[in-house]
Amino acid sequence: MIPNGHHTAENVSLFVPGLSVTYTCEPGYLLVGETTIRCLSSGDWSAVIPRCEEAQCDAPGPLLNGQIKGPANRRVGVTVTFSCNEGYRLRGQPSSQCVIAGQKALWTKMPKCEGRLCKL
Image 1 (spheres, rainbow, N blue to C red):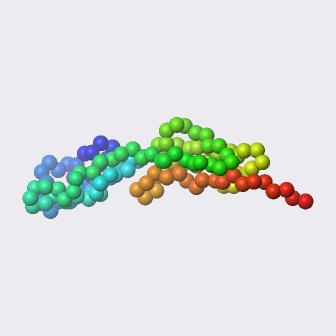
Image 2 (image 1 turned 90 degrees about the horizontal axis):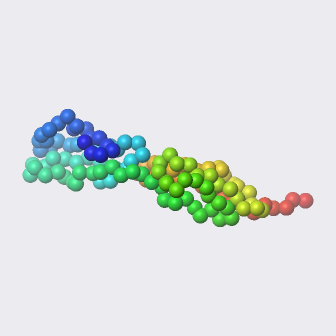
């Protein structure tokens, strides 16, 4: 077993050449390395045993003409909210969440602050 993850041969103690092992991570973690490794006839593995790292988004922003509010951590599941400066309106969702998409931690769609126009 790997910390914060699992593999398909958890009940196997001896690995024979040709045996493949596939790794997965628990929710909120990303796999670093090969998903599947194979036991070679030399007794070595075909790649380094992967590891699971906690997924974190990059800092959201900047939001031009606005502010972003939320917790300091950027773990998967965290939500930030947006507001615009006076004279601007929010175009898009008022919040964004850190999610795993593919093999990356990303924020859901980010809004923009647009200037308000005068109408006659």
